[in-house]
Amino acid sequence: MPTAATPSVAARVRRREADGMAVASFILGLIGLLLFNLILGPVALVLGSLALTRGTARRGRALLGLALGAADLVVLAVALVAGHGVLWQFG
Image 1 (cartoon, rainbow, N blue to C red):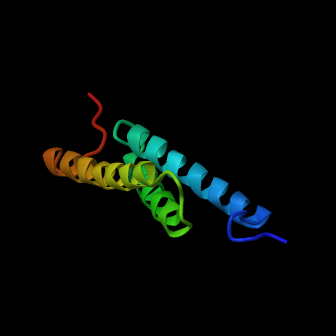
Image 2: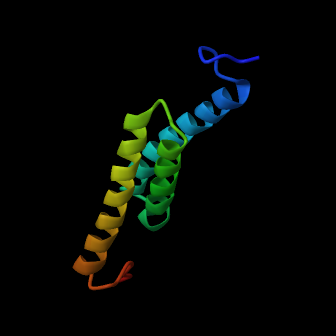
């Protein structure tokens, strides 16, 4: 029987999953600054918020993932405005 000092197996698994989400949020947000920011930005935001909700031990990484996910969307908006709505131009 788990006590207050020893968390249950389910709680440890949940914490480990939340830690993985925090790291994934950070990595995807970082990659999203350069590639596929339309897709990776929102994914980083969702994973970061889920990690924080589930009580990750890597709170800083989750917060960085949230910030980078938001930055991904800002970079996309700036690129669209600067290119007058044209994402790719050939020739």
